[in-house]
Amino acid sequence: MRQVSSSVRTAKTPIGGIEYTLERKKVKNINLRVRRDGTVYVSAASRVPVREIEGFIAAKCSYIKQAQEHFRSRTETAAEERRFAQGASVMYLGRPLELCIIQSPTEGVTEEEHRLVIALRDSSELSRGERLYAKWLDGRCREVFTDLMKEIYPFFKAMGVPFPQLKIRTMKARWGSCHYTKGMIVLNRYLIEAPRHCITHVVAHEFCHFIYPNHSRDFYSLLDKVCPHWRSDKAELERLVVL
Image (spheres, one colour):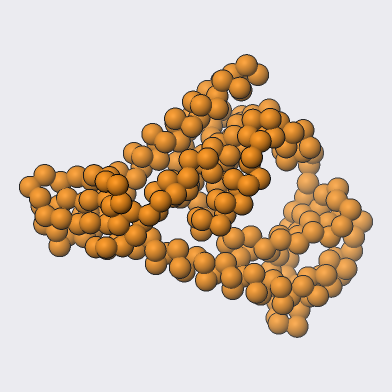
């Protein structure tokens, strides 16, 4: 596996200091990316001086600020949309469901065509309703993610990959990760907001890391075979769900 080195630095720009992560790797150009969490990532070859890299960042400072503000706005909007309250809209497998909180002697969560009914003995106890909703959502995540893993697995079983353990976490910077040495796939809880085909491409991506624990040309060639439409699925996922 190819080794890279990385460090966190701060570049002086016309709009002030910009903190960035610099990764030294075999690339032809200086590459800059603003991640969804607002952090700045730069990759460059080891021969490129830091002053040249930071001059590049300074030249791109307006773009960086604009991208950071865009992601911050989207994150704040997403947080508001995920707010638990009567009549709020929650996304589930690509479709909006209206939260309907009712009073009932039997507590529970029921999914209907266009709404999610939260039954509480005391309908004013919203914190209790939110806990029930979170528990229901965790159960649905495990069920849906496991089903998708089982759908994809036959391709990798033929390549000698044991069926992996599934972990579900709330993550702010990635959709999933593969711990190939531990036989484990970690998937982001927020994926449940997306259509199934969008989740499938993430599952396929992480499975491919059991064969290629990198993002090499061979990795993407394998991903193309397992999930031919992954590029459009990825674009749709990033448009619909904000971390």
